[in-house]
Length: 352
Ligand SMILES: Nc1ncnc2c1ncn2[C@@H]1O[C@H](COP(=O)(O)OP(=O)(O)OP(=O)(O)O)[C@@H](O)[C@H]1O
Ligand code: SF4
Ligand SMILES: [Mg+2]
Image: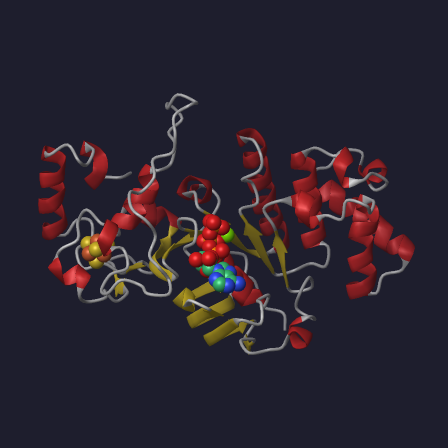
């Protein structure tokens, strides 16, 4: 089931993932369609609760029994939506794997680093002890851990946060996956280490022709590290584009709001992230029309009644779901009004 570099590796078609709860059905992922080629990286961004983690877990088939999935997930040309955990097991590790946000919760604190890397190599790839140990040393070197051999005999608490995250990446890479999910892999780390980890993931992607799905709430994090960006809001894909195109020509007022919440280098270190006023939508009873309408400064009557469909922008591969996108006469008129009233900063219409 190997896919050549550049060929489509993952294809989602109207993927939905709902959870049965006492309050009703939670529409955590509500119709996501996208394609990812082998070797490409996709950034999934959106506020907390927008469905980023559920989307990744849904693709991997790591969901609780309360989850109901609809739509299609094709991996290497094979439909995997609807496969049981038993059927998915041969894909985990060997074809797709995940790096989680907090390595302390994911690494076994009582087991030496070496054993945690060697075990999956023996189990999934059938390596003998010596071979697995040599591979583990090489993996630690690949993720730039100094004195790799000595590290094998250390426990997770003996390593720094950045080193532990590198170990997690080594474990995720161990069986040579073609698709790596990295779910907020740097939020627990300081800014310099964050950049090193993101560079490391990118470097491994190139070396291995691997695809990467990088999940984050920070549009700034994905800017320099992804080929494409999927913006999620209330479980839906609301804008999707090659990264350069998105930054040059973002269409959704929501994407622009996320952009404005990125701290600038010039900001004083104590300045807080700008947040988008209002609450994310209730996923059991989503608002009528556009999900973002109750919080959108540009909403007009139609937005509260009719849901905007995904529409193609002028550049290939760029889609968005908005009745009055950035650059439309309605948007520009409203933006001028908001700027006059001092509600919107003057740069709001031209994000570069
Ligand atoms: N097992 C579950 N049962 C019911 N609802 C769930 C379950 N798992 C997630 N949800 C809901 O699905 C929605 C999407 O959650 P998800 O964890 O994907 O958000 P996220 O975008 O990853 O947010 P964050 O940035 O905080 O990690 C949330 O409203 C969450 O409460
Ligand atoms: S459709 Fe309307 S409410 Fe939704 S983002 Fe566009 S302008 Fe705002
Ligand atoms: Mg999450």
